[in-house]
Amino acid sequence: MVNSNKYRKIYQELSGKIINDEYKHGEQLPSENLLVKKYGVSRETVRKALSLLQTNGFIQKLKGKGSVVIYDQSLNFPVSQLISFEEIKQSLNMDYHTVVESFETVVAKDHPKVQEALNISEDTKLFRVVRSRRKNDLVNIVDTDYFIQEMMPALSKEIAEQSIYDYIERRLGLKIAYSNKVITFEPMSEYEIDLFVEATPPYAAVVRSIVHLADAIPFQYNVSKHRASEFKFVDFSRRTIEKEK
Amino acid sequence: MVNSNKYRKIYQELSGKIINDEYKHGEQLPSENLLVKKYGVSRETVRKALSLLQTNGFIQKLKGKGSVVIYDQSLNFPVSQLISFEEIKQSLNMDYHTVVESFETVVAKDHPKVQEALNISEDTKLFRVVRSRRKNDLVNIVDTDYFIQEMMPALSKEIAEQSIYDYIERRLGLKIAYSNKVITFEPMSEYEIDLFVEATPPYAAVVRSIVHLADAIPFQYNVSKHRASEFKFVDFSRRTIEKEK
DNA sequence: TAGTGGTCTAGACCACCCG
DNA sequence: GGGTGGTCTAGACCACTAC
Image 1 (cartoon, rainbow over the protein chains, first blue to last red):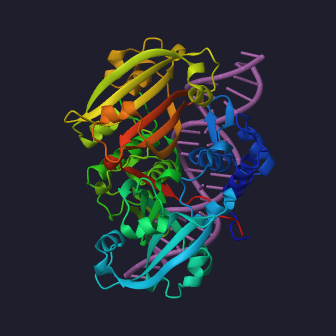
Image 2 (cartoon, chains in turn purple, orange, yellow, brown):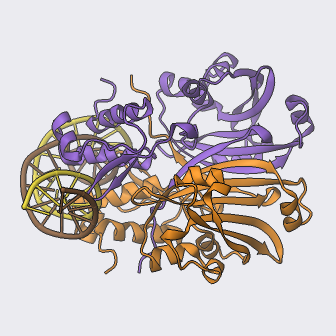
Image 3 (cartoon, rainbow over the protein chains, first blue to last red):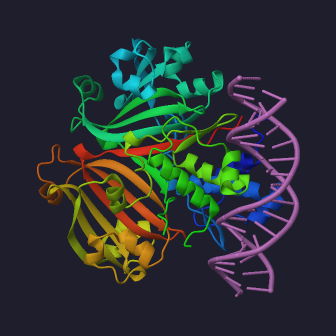
């Protein structure tokens, strides 16, 4: 009911079957014509679903042959998607535990990079949330998030302990659309060295991202610091742009 | 002549104008109807081009409003694409210089990870190419590539000094389609510490990728090691998959 | 030759945004 | 209400793969 798009339903069903290994790596999906009959939709609708599957790394379409599954379970897919920690945790069955290290209100002018990234005025109030992600009590990730207070005045420490994305999408009905990420490798601060405990070297893999809503408004600035030895970023990319000539 | 696709031409033209700042960040593109008239094509064709622009992080489409440019020059975009070093170098005007450190023939069984990644038999012959990328004679990146010899018997050290991708796509006419990448941070080997000279800490950002052709055949295994302090990976991602219900 | 995916069209109806 | 993007259709023609 919530989402009656035909092509999304087909996408959901096919991607689900691929993830559950009903369609295995290397196997072919039914042809477009068969899918047209099976779902009772037009060919362009089927093709829209298949095109999404291809973009997201589930299949490769072969002209004259068919669509073959290229999704690989063993690669801990899909981490290059815009996805929250809670969602990754659930999909991978990770044994992680979140601790809210701090939850405070700050002013944009004291965080100039955030101010610039979110394109807000100096006196905009922000929530600053620091959360550690622990496995067997050992900190492996420290997330620092900045949210514009006006957009989500009811955000609380309790929500931060659960999933903020869930809150934003389900409670507030906002649509999270896209993000820019930058990955670097940086020395840890004293605070971080304390938190991580015995991080050798005292460097962290750092992922900074600016997350935008569907109306193109930036609403979150995130700095995610990872124990370097545990860091692993998986990416799927396509060669879409060819030079002309 | 080479590529007469209408939607690709529209994509090329619009993305070019965005990159050249003719359409600036935050500005709107002409509406779909206007583009339909301008290019003399059907609306679905225009939409296919716009959809590609959105997927690749150039624009965000806003229902009821239009398409707004979100591409940001300052982010050294687009590095998360599947793109060769030579192409990045050209598009960013980088002052880099490539040295082929070694060019040899090896057998798959001596490189089990490569054998598995490329899904080949034990006795498959491979080219193993090691190239350093230097800025002012200082090594910042060391690329190690493995190619299946049978697929490109004429590959040579001279070609490796230029662009192997150019050779594969233009000379051999093969279509490079997609890749899986994994980014980690790892201690350098003695060989690498020598090559990089004074790398502090002696860690490298490592990008491993398996590159596939359009027929889904893996043809390249690449290990790209970067001086950690210089490493910067930029990624654009969309939240495409929503949970149903 | 039959089947597959790739491109393109002309038109329809809908939901959303704004003045 | 008029414009914008989102979804969907039925049909056409093409290029490629396989037998």
